[in-house]
Every structure is written in C-alpha cells, then in structure tokens.
Image 1: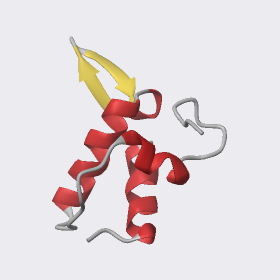
Image 2 (image 1 turned 30 degrees about the vertical axis):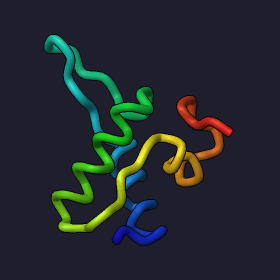
Image 3 (image 1 turned 90 degrees about the vertical axis):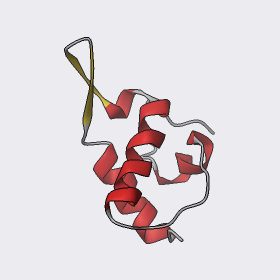
Image 4 (image 1 turned 180 degrees about the horizontal axis):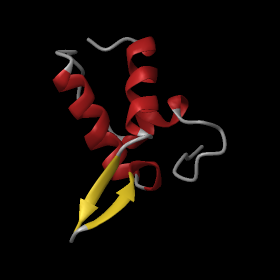
Length: 71
C-alpha cells in the first residue's frame, strides 16, 4: 500500500512527465486525469500497491500553485 512519502514522490515525478495526443506533447501538470494515470503507472512500475484513486486524493500532494489543484 502506498504511503504518503511514496505518493509525494510519485506525484512529483508525474508532474515532470508529458503525454502525447495526435503527435503533440502535453505536460501531465495540466491534466488531472493524466496525473492520476501517471501516478498509477509510477506505482505499477515500482510494484507499490495502491487503492483505487481519483484526482481529489492527490490534491494534498500538489504544489499550492498548481493549476490542477482543487480545494
């Protein structure tokens, strides 16, 4: 089960990644949906178990000035 420290590392890593749509690269830091997918990928790649999650669960780990942070 992912712990808070592992979740923070995963979110920090995810925010530095990009994803492609129709050959165009976009930062994960601009998409709540892609943030969740990228954090899940990090956990899977590092064999870290985690419960189902949504973007709301990751909000506490985002920088205060993040454009995708809510609450």
